[in-house]
Length: 145
Figure 1 (cartoon, rainbow, N blue to C red):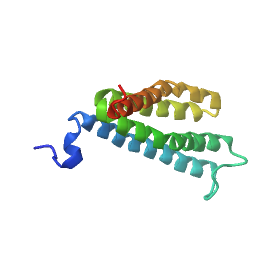
Figure 2: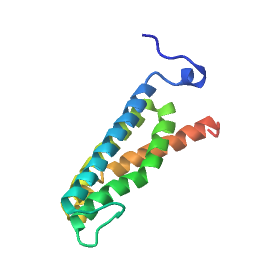
Figure 3: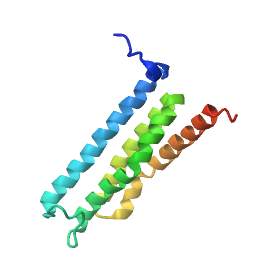
Figure 4: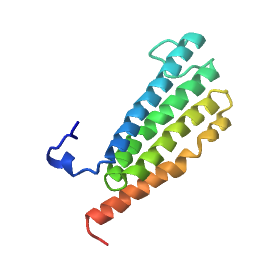
């Protein structure tokens, strides 16, 4: 099967497909975290529209793990998409590490000991890598170097 060839998309490197796959995998990760919140709502009897519970700190840990990931998600997607244009393999690798780190972060948080969320700290260098590659791409695109 021939790759799709149209306009700007035809200028993307072939390896950009890895970036697209990692972006798609991030949706699976978010869905998983969202399902965990739904399950915790039932378990701890926290009804909608309450975001948090005054009496169920374990529910709050599950909810917070999801919420924090949602807060970081827009920059992740932007940096993944932009850095992937110039550095598709490295960007996909950093993106995959970040996704895995969010599972570690969430499962640490789910213990009820919020300090254990730092189990996912290995995702910070991955996000910084995406950010750095995005800046490098922009600098090169602007022909500043």
